[in-house]
Length: 188
Image (cartoon, rainbow, N blue to C red; front, side, top):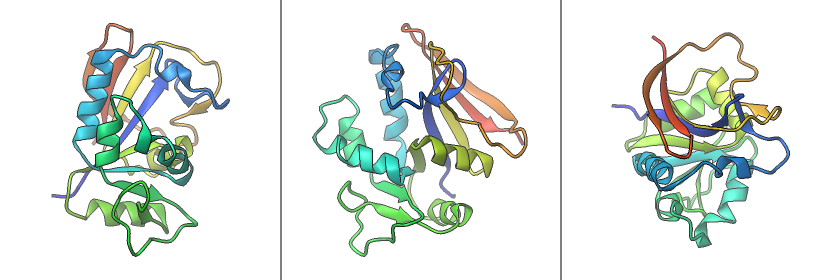
């Protein structure tokens, strides 16, 4: 059975995954122990954590020494970086220091990594990377943590779709801080 590509993102009520200003504190304002546990449980199912190269650069400087509830799973799960400019390292082991590299055409790279044995590929970072995956219909499951905040502007997850993307709600969970975990699959 092939791996699935699972996109996990925090989303504002008005559909933005990034404020566009660099300040993303809105993501954590409605979080609590239950939302943390839900996110950790989803991350724990991943065989690879994938992200774009810019997000990887940001995260690689933070997670190895972080004391966050997410740190253990973020550091233990192998990393896969999608990059148009980086070549794969011969000594890649999936660590923060030597991540696996996916390059070339996005659909081909995703197909290659989905065909490898292991757990799901969990995409975490990079709003533009997430947009590209959604637009190319490469995502098998969207795990969206809907945060109770409206940003008014920013980077929309589904901006730039060449046509509407029909989704089916697979599950929904409400948390006491006002956030909702929404899981969608592409409609057949």
